[in-house]
Length: 183
Image (cartoon, rainbow, N blue to C red; front, side, top):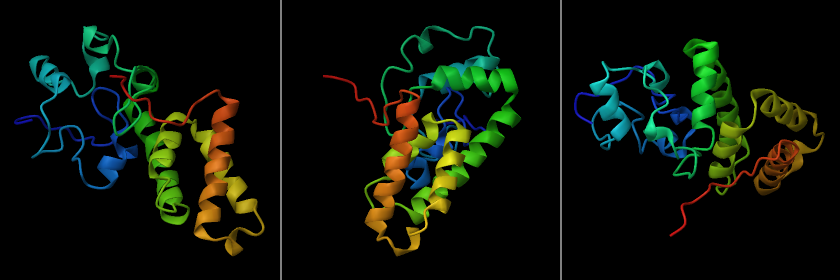
């Protein structure tokens, strides 16, 4: 969107974790306020009308009607925790939130570079978005402890890591599938 720029491309002003999105990782999206090619966005437009707030939680009107159903459906990235993530960033501060997201991005890079058989990118992105950092660190430790990991094929490694993530998600009652809008 013309005239809309933000320094933080990892956490969108609406609460999406862009740095953990497959479209952003594939360089198919410049992120929120990333310059040329941004789609028109009602929240970006709103930010510009409200003195350029960098995050919606900084606006005195937050949460407004734009957030009524913001967590209901997913797109390329899960939207499930947008409100919760905004509240977390507001409560702990954006620097602390970004530091945690940077750690999650490093873990996602490990999953994608070492354990992706070409079919797990979305699963890994959703898992890293929805699971707690401690859960992801536990999964990494489990991978490191598996004695025969180096002898497995990439497909077997991928299945093993996906299973660990699914198990971690199940303990928190989290479904690691994108929720598409019906009809």
